[in-house]
Length: 89
Length: 142
Image 1 (cartoon, chains in turn brown, cyan):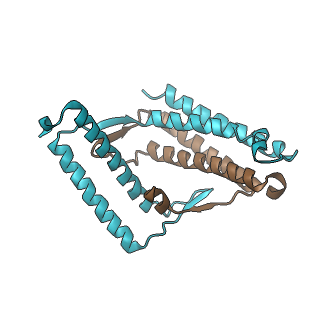
Image 2: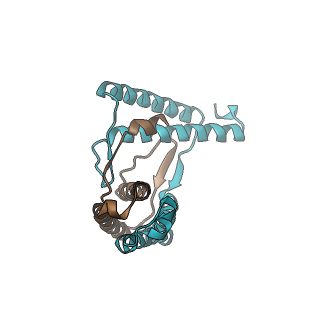
Image 3: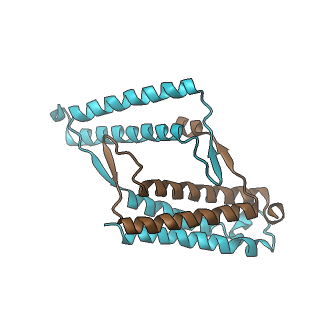
């Protein structure tokens, strides 16, 4: 179905938008758990009640399910990315 | 030692060191996150275990030096509001998702008539979630 619905450029554009959204959802989830270590010169604070954290966590989980469904429907493939590229940049 | 710098010099040095520290910790996180598996991405670090260990050592040494400079110049720890960053990111995703509806994909070529019914409902749903997350972090963070 994917190749009938999207040309390669449209497919690449959609994959990029959804990939970035997914990464930030997962990063937000990490912040909710307080797994972001404090630095020497900065400290990251998230003032959100435990009840709201639970709401957001549930929302993120269901959103990732939606992204997975859409990716499957459109045949968007998992991209292997090399963090070394980002480190050099 | 802190009186060796005027206010502007102090701010400049602080920002430089803080941003360097952020980058160092980001690199550490990237090197450690190669087991994480997303839906649309899978990190795979191409450098050897030996070079990775060397990088960890250098980062650790750099962080020690930042710690020492911070102590010498009596820099305070800056508090950063993550909610603001999340609001900004989610607002950006909301706009990008709306730009991915079928009619907007015309800029990349002809759009198949069946695309709208297969794509737009998902995209609209995801964009609404991005906006609701931006709003939630605005309304519920103190």
